Image (cartoon, rainbow over all chains, first blue to last red):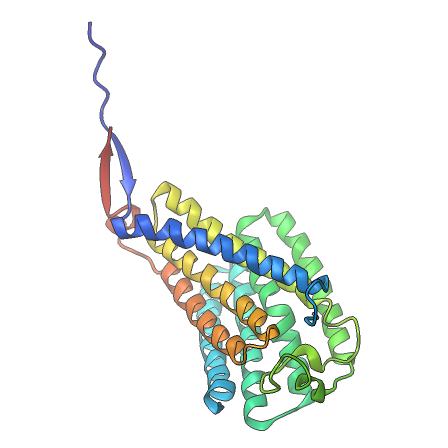
Length: 53
Length: 242
């Protein structure tokens, strides 16, 4: 006895260039945001010599 | 150098005010609070750019400096970020955050307009003296506020745009909004880095990144809010997967 065949699932996708570029861009944005926040915190807490808020 | 310290900030200001008009027009049609706050934020961005250009063209003016620091350095990111708060968090919490930001902004304005200034201090630091710099504020208690406003604004504006882009990307819907939000996040990050470069003594970085930031924010907003045809909206292609 065979199981009833499932209909093929449809997976949406963007054009190939966006499939690659968007996660790359979001990853870079995340890294850049962390760097910017750490720098701002370091300045605010006067951890960097010679650089004051 | 005239281009760098005068024309570029004036162009940033112009782009920001035009962008603000677009946002206010959309606000009048839709009456959504995030649009009102983004519009106010872009007016602040424009005031900041105008003051930088004014300083480059005509030199020191205490009122121009105070307006620049208050709107262009202290409040702009936080007010733009507050707009994103209205999009992403519950309305009740957004109102509470708005009230806190309003009180903090009034306190910042009070401190800024009461502060003692010394324009000579701008040239005796890592800053070149050609750019406006918070170093001119002699009184304590003003500049320490600024990083907290900027952290709040950057986290909400950049984080909110990146989060929205991620949600749409995961569902593979509304590609124009993904692209728009990526541009908005990038545009919001650029001036933050420009400010950091300026603190490290890289002349002109702030003004250039402010211009690029204003352009990217504007293009990102237009991209994210431009309606697309229903067929294009969901997905340009569908890949059957096994």
